[in-house]
Amino acid sequence: MASCFIRGGAFASPRQGGLRGSKVDSAAQNAQNCVVSGKMTQMDKIGKYEITRELGSGATSTVYLATDTFSKQQVAIKLFDLKSLRDPNSARIYRKLLMTEASLAGKLSHPHIVKILDAVMDGDVNYMVMEYIEGSTLEQYAEVDNLLPISTVAEITYKCCKALEYAQYQGVIHRDIKPANILLQGETNIKISDFGSAAIQNQQTTQVSGVGSPAYMSPEQVKELSLTHQTDIYSLGVVMYKLLTGKLPFDASNNFSMIYQILNIEPPPPSTFRPEIPQELDVIVRRAMEKDTAKRYQTWDEFARDLVGFFSHVTTARKEIFDTEKFDTLRSLAFFRNFSDVELWEVLRISEWRKVPEAEYILRDGESGRTFYILAQGTVRVVKQGRLLSLLHHGDCFGEMAHLFEHEFKRSTDVVAKSDALLIEINPDVLVRATTGCRFQFDDAFLRMLVRRLAVANKRISHLLADQEQTEKE
Image (cartoon, rainbow, N blue to C red):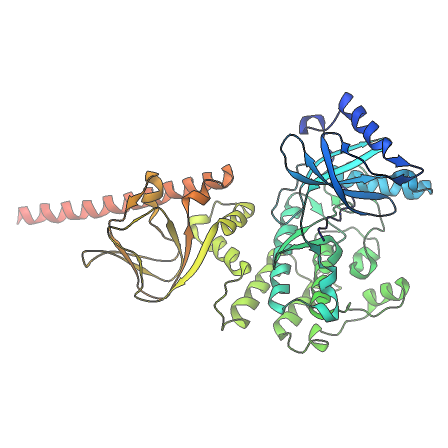
């Protein structure tokens, strides 16, 4: 079943395309018409969004699959019924959480964070519009009889690290990381949702305290101390523990016992419950869950680096290249040095990766084609009629002239693997559908590469002229 579990949403100001004036009145009428005696009833439209069907409902909200009548994009709309909260204090806190997430409109744009597209928070009319995610939460994969492969858990954790690092750079701490707030698409593609509990840097309003799920709270969160991104690091460590073992690190019958253990007890390593878990992952989980923040991972990058190390040192005998390794490789290559993390995830999405054995021809002189390549690992030879023209190493690009000429192009050299190599293959027909920012970065990288090659060519010509001049003098 398609899922979209988000407590809040994004508040759209007039500048951001939010509904105001008569549009709000119309949306209000539509929304109010579907609330009868505190219960949601069937509706056809909310604002400009045509309702397709109900996806799910709870005590205070109903989630609908809908279509944006302008863009024809499928969206998920969460319509809130705050009247059902009879306790005024509960209603106030809940609305505060909604407004917190609403304030993030347009602020978090990352491939592993659910996008919030629109919102109205106006008296009795309260709804959020977000991208529709077809998938399920990680909750079902946190049970003993339905665990994911160990490498998949590590991959998911890595993507969470990069998404939450991005959020931190935007001044946002999630504060409620748990399997129910992480959506899974396919095998390892994730989307983090529910930023209603988030702490937002420089926000002028008071944050709601005591939010979060007790089993995933950090010691400092339990104590209601000032929080940093390290509280999310701790919570992600607990998520990793649960996904690896199907068990929470602390076995407690009530919240009081849970809180005591979070503050005072060291949990057993995950391999206690699943012996095939490598020691390296035990160490990673333990460091993420250190009670002392000075011993815990200081940055998301430290956490992510250890996960990359796990893939490179533990999972060696395999042909598959995990997204974790691909992203880390892209970040290390000079060609991609000016790409943002979001743009690198896009490169990963539009590229094909393949391993090439020594002596294999990658391109042949005279053949047609427009695909270009970036060398991720290894060395290749550029050859013309048997004569070596140059050697290319990791980070170098080749075959790009066909792309730059923008038409079917005949290759003018052979390119042969000098050693086992890993290639990043880009089809220009796919690249043209990438975002403007991503395409700009490719153009900028090509320009830097061409200038560098021109400088090398000029240096060679200068040496040849100097040698010729010396010969003439002699």
